[in-house]
Image 1 (spheres, rainbow, N blue to C red):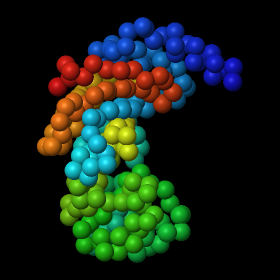
Image 2: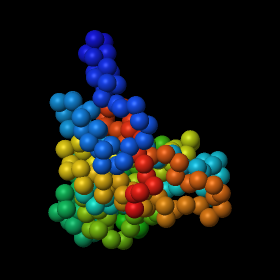
Image 3: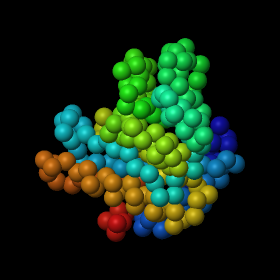
Image 4: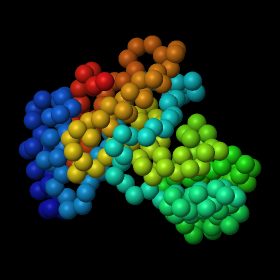
Length: 230
């Protein structure tokens, strides 16, 4: 507990009195806060002025960040035929169909993203009760149900993020690692916000993006002035 108290005091002492930071100074402050021995992830939380109870106002999308996330992504790829060889060559950790479905049912494997070729979805749908609650069900809107398995795997391995709002209308997602160059972190955040802006619901009145906060795995949240971000 003493260590936690010391760290909390350290982080609080670092935080200036000002409430909102320009993106450049926000990233600099974030790096000062990252004192853990491991390479902390950088997360972005975007508060949206949507009503999550209205289906036509919910936000869900995927993008490939310009500089990736810095995470090692484990893939499960449901496919057949030549696509099996393609998936294995591209480094997918788990590849198959019926055997892969059984492994997941028996909870023998863990992965971060599931990709499925279109012709396998009739079988993959059996996993809905398992993958759905974990946010891992392949989805054509996210590019994870596709006939282009090669492209989907490359995107996922390089730095594709899938994001959606939670029940409070907030989007939470990773935008990099603390050891990324400042410019790369900024451009990843720019890409996320640009993607979000394109999804503004047509019937939404008032402010859409209300607040942008960045933080590391262990740091305090820093509010960013997003008005000057592309």
